[in-house]
Amino acid sequence: MFGKSKSSRQKRIDSLIGAGTVVRGDIVFEGGLRIDGHVVGNVTAAEGKAATLVISEQARVEGGVEVSHIVINGQVHGPVSALDSLELQPKARIVGDVAYKVLEMHVGAVVQGRLDPGNAEPGPSAVVEFKRGIKT
Image 1 (cartoon, rainbow, N blue to C red):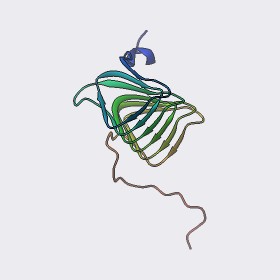
Image 2: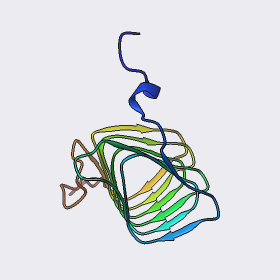
Image 3: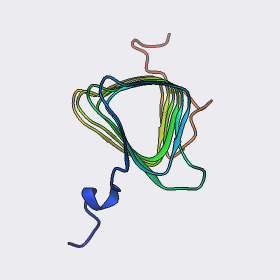
């Protein structure tokens, strides 16, 4: 009532890449896109356009993803850049660096790469290493 609900932040889905469909090549879209199939290529929103991307549980993307609002419950092998918000649902599997402004990560989601908060462009950044033991 006082703030925007999660559903009001997400836009409608205009396009669908269905299960069993394989797309080879880069995809640039406006509005909303849901991927249930397999994409070999980069997935990006049209320049300067707010967009929503949903990668479903059975979906796989092999390439970079750069969209303002992203919901992932499938697999992405490549860098992910959420210009506004990123939701990683329980079956999400990402192999690559992730940049975001707002992150919601559910129990079970896996990221093999760097998480870069506050920056929507993955790339070189400070790395924090945790080491066991005491320096002598």
